[in-house]
Length: 118
Length: 115
Image (cartoon, rainbow over all chains, first blue to last red; front, side, top):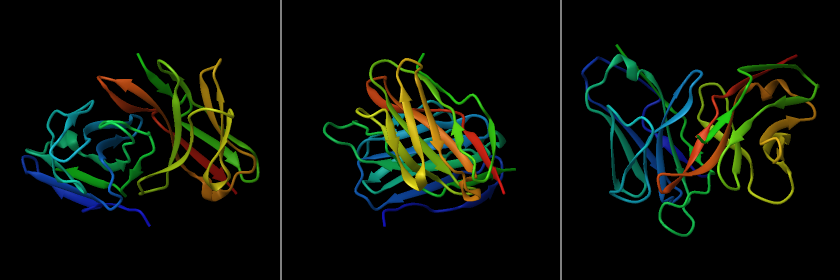
């Protein structure tokens, strides 16, 4: 069974703390994504990666960074957490047919990480 | 601007009745259209997609969606709703932006099926 695994389902952190959210996929997918989900706003793309050590900014990258040292792992980092980063974070992966950066639109999601920043 | 709209925040349907969750889009070129479902406290799951061909596409759990090019719509349907269909449903369209393909997401529609 294919899987995208997010390391933590629930986290509570304090303002100013550094936060790591880890995501691992076992499908050998080229593309990996980090989204943020807030009620009424749908999904907003934070960062994505089409290859190892490659990253591209999404719609809301401010306050976040990412790391992709291995194909199967994509990490989201909050350097200094703030209360407005309280949210559900979703990791996803997808196959990239043909050229680098191609995107079928069919994503596989992890279970999500609900972060609360106090 | 390229966009996806889900005009209803919530849809209520009695069990056994047909259901429709609406989606309209605005995108350049031929769209790739998707529906995803999110059950409570879970990640999203792919339901179905339209790329080309027959305007009626069938997906998981008995769902289907109808692509209407003239109305730029891609409504999700099911002939007979189940209580277990209660979930959050997202419509998405693949668009070419900033030299890459990306998914543009609707805000989501909460579907409530009452026994």
